[in-house]
Length: 252
Image 1 (cartoon, rainbow, N blue to C red):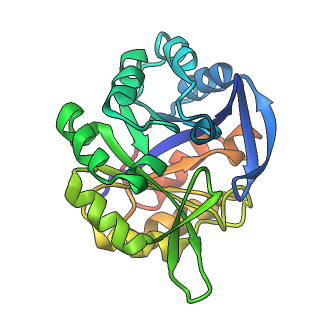
Image 2 (image 1 turned 90 degrees about the horizontal axis):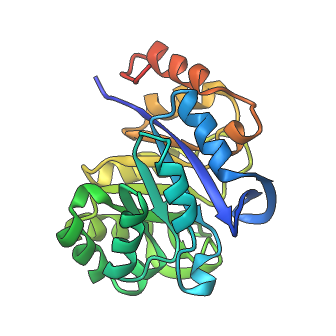
């Protein structure tokens, strides 16, 4: 029986928790440290911090937020955005993160995946993919928080990254992100069949039945949720109850 993890995704700009649609039109939601603490108290399995503007400035700015969060939260913390070198990864991990998520820098130089995995382990190396469906029906990898096309096909990139040492893959559907219209089942199904490493599905959660559809029709290992949690549309306990009722293991 497959175990499903529930992850709270917090996109950060400066000191603020923000949220948009299709990774655009970002609006301030509140204090990320307060939200993370609330999710921890409510039973979240992991926290995911993504610096949404880090690629523009060339570095990750979340050290203080990570440090303050890690003092009081005892679940795994994954951090992404602006991590371009092994030193960047080391600095983020020293701040209190447990895992590193890389996207733009890995696309620019795939060897970075191998370097981080060799230094810190595959279990700490997460490939972040921002995927958008193109006109011919395949999915293309985007970088810089969904701003730039890479020319890479998601199906090929995920296999290469896994071979280089990525121990987990976070897949964000740009088409579905922030819409509340359900996950991109076809995309998640395709990727989860390509590799054996755990897949985290992100983008589209809107109602509780979306969880059942996702986990019953794909082989994903975790779901990262933002909008529905931030705006209290659905609780963590409701999500976990649905996972259990669907016949999967979940930490209650």
